[in-house]
Picture (cartoon, rainbow, N blue to C red):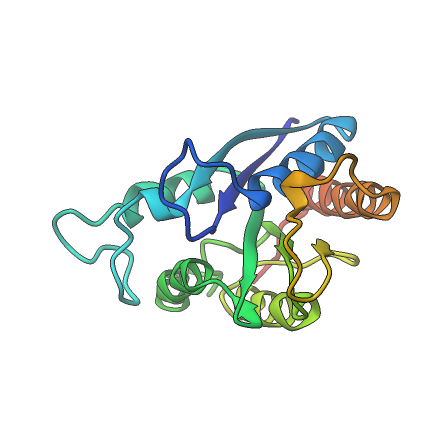
Length: 202
């Protein structure tokens, strides 16, 4: 059976036509997933949507989360991507995780959340320290709401502190980033294929 992934770009830039280093990093990971026969169906620019604050799956009229939630759950793998901002993951990524809190009360007859037997990985970029801190925040939150995080689940790049060069401006993708992306994709694809035949029993 085919494996599908969807990427969420949690940049603070709401204009989908504005270049984003997060998009550039997601593209590196998407190439690695394609090598593993995983289709990355699309990258969603979350800041371009109206994702309301809250912890339910529908915060009322105008809330774009219900449609995004359905899209996320229609895939086997979630790529959560974002920049380091003030040493932390972006507020947009935090909003996504807060909305997934609703999964805790949306369990099936075996107490499984909608995200059970689905895999999540992260991509992180920035010009300051914080990649490990951001991935720790992301993975703890994702695990709390039912996602499975594989070994080597983060692909990141951190430039010179207070520097002016962004990931999207590099002349070439560093070899270590490319190799890590392949490991992330391989481990995530492996887990997702296992889950297709053997989901969590609950």
